Image (cartoon, helix red, strand yellow):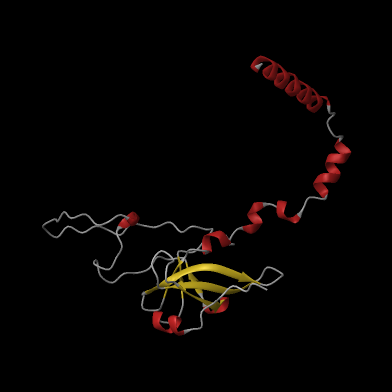
Length: 178
């Protein structure tokens, strides 16, 4: 019984493959016409140099002028023509639980390519997101800060001139169901 199904499957695959190979290639006139009517999205990718990926803006950390963490970008709100009008920022909470969402006009948020400058070693995050080691060294050995290469497709973080308390006092953003 299994052999019958296997033979039928092989025969069907052979028939479909022969139809696909039997199609004739398109003429060069049709190819030229197709390339001249290519959609705008298929343009040379070098023309998009300097633009950011919106998928990388979502999740970006937001800091204030004092380098205090305010939250992170949860969403970007656009108008019908695709222009970004507002940024939805999640303030407070833990792993999204208890988070207060606020919308801020896009022009109020400043995107920065350079990493946050920490003033003390105790407030700086460990390199690579790893926890600091518990080993100590003696002496005056210093290490030069690592040079971070800027990513051309998204900024390092966002800046907003507000405090966490000011953002929590703002009305909560709710997605419309209409």
